[in-house]
Length: 379
Image 1 (tube, rainbow, N blue to C red):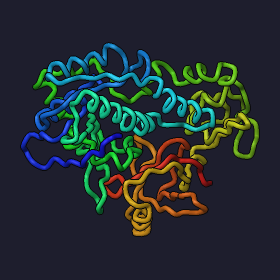
Image 2: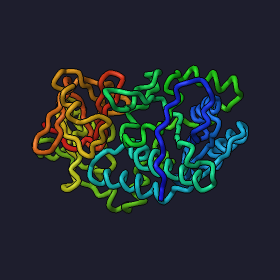
Image 3: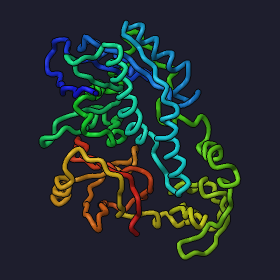
Image 4: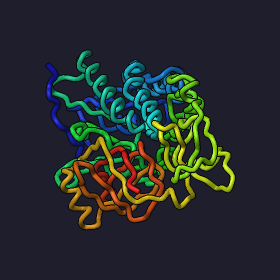
């Protein structure tokens, strides 16, 4: 029977003896410095990596070999877990299924939810229990090199934006369960990227040769290649009509999965410019419009995750305090929310291009309150 781990908060400058902290290592500069910083505070620390696919941009022998070498250099135990099968089911299947439905998913969000801060977290804890490193007298903690923070907010723990707003990764972390927040540490949240690079240089850590995790890590080439691998070339390249919103046929597409909302290039239409407005998977059509036709200000979300009670989020909305971010690289904007027939509607101040499958993440200033997957655009 799994023991219940006590909640531990680091508050002083003494080295922590009553906790074991596992640090997720990617082989990159951020996680390496995270391990180094935490080693200054915690007496019991280990490094860990996970294999989630075979020979990808971020999961290969060269990259994970760097993770092992960093752990060896800092003289901490190192573990490496094979999560390839679990990642395929939890993340890749979701990614391909969403594209088949005409949506544009964000696999990094799902990976953080289902793998990194769930299964990987649990694997690390189980391993430490198994080898006796973790026992009833020690709390389990888990850390990564994300640029974010965890902070108290209105009686709850929530994710707070990182100090370096240009590197802030809070958006990608909104699906972590609130039950895990007390055990998670983000040591880079109080630093800027420039400061982290300076520490890495000072300590002689490698700062080049590791690609920033901006791409889809499990696809070395184009995303369409993965879809063809899963569904077959015939289904992915099944041609159909490109139509306007009135249903007038303007041209032909080469398979709706080749297109994303907002796309302008590669449509091959006259009298442009035209932009992809939405994808109708059932009818195998690509619907296009002018730039202004892409702008909407209302949508619904599904599959929500909240760090605070939803009724409190509603109060902030009513007070005009709530803001929302609908893409990782998009700015936040003020919004109103309302529940209608068990669906949460969001109305944004400024009409914008909204993409089903992406995430809507809600903030009160620096504090991330929760979010959900964008489901339906209300025209």
